[in-house]
Image 1 (tube, each protein chain N blue to C red):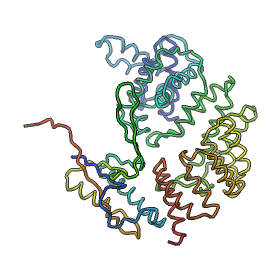
Image 2: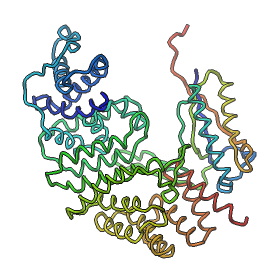
Image 3: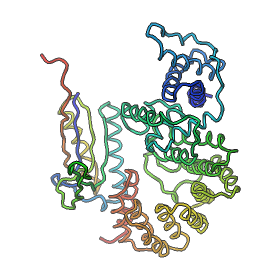
Image 4: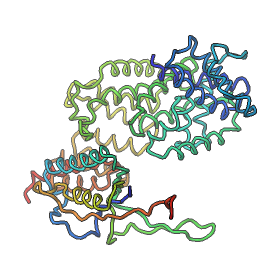
Length: 387
Length: 135
């Protein structure tokens, strides 16, 4: 394993050890970040035989140093060998407690995301700031405020996996891919959460459903954008570029989750993704089954976004008139409502309306890539119309 | 080095020479325009002169304080707003002349018929930090 990956894997366990020794979470987290920094500086000269013990020892010294006089803290850690101070070892439960703490309901989503990426993911503040395109000082403040918010929470307090899933979903779905691949990071952390909660009930099938959802969407990534960064819609993607090993894994994870017969929103969304993955060509998509899964999703969540996606699926399964009828019942103020309407009008053969709606949708598009895509659609149809 | 803001307007700038709106271009023209804009930003990153670039949604809301304990007052969006900013690019360049040249280049982005739009862009210097050496 690369040192960077190994270090990040070990981060939550090392924080757990320090917290078990009585260090408060915020201080432990700082000490471990410093130890990680130390590791990136000194490991290239030879990785220690017991990386975790090394990190624990260095983090422990960082913590002690922070509490000692200036004179006593001169570069001692550079000579630290494998010599962990006595104390209880960490357990898997510590890592799980850390997940819960970083996704604590008292945190705003943005704070929970940042704290999770740092304390559980082992990313640096600089990397997290770059991923969300904010100045490093801003992200540092966001993280320290988050730590203050959870300062009074007992580490061993039972948590809710649903809040952790929401945070991991946000990491997967939002953020910019630069130095750090947030989607891959979200998958790594979700795998970890699956292994920590697998035998504990507590919605384990939904955590598996979330992992399946991520794997199935990540599988499409190579086909989702062109070299110039523009979006390729699902129907036009080159399916030979989908990652079949991720699909196989995602489908297997989903099937074993569904077999436990406790459906939830992530499993239902993953089922839709699995049906797309299952179609060798866009025309072979099993739309009636997809509509069925959107019905389930609507029943579970009542989400207007699910209703919008369902209307598009109905348009594919039962024809554009049925799709437009379903769309008429969805709040027109919803993002992408106009784009969905444009698409269904185009399928129904009403090209002038479709062209006008694509133009409108481009103006209100929530992302630049979507704006460009919708402008192209408007141009494509506009070209076929008489002036 | 000096920073400049290049402002692109939805409305409020003088009429472009080739001002056919984008939704009446051909797909190829749209494609060429987007590529030109991306290439331009990439080139400035390459020369170390790019700072930031963002596009804005066309509709916004006016907001103002309405007194202690009261929620802020909102107004708009106004369909008749004369000046509407579409987006910006911030550049950090050695001279005003260089800023002018870059703005000119950006204004030459291709539009309908494949020719330059000759769009009017607004160039505004940033007020800078006070220098350390003052005499």
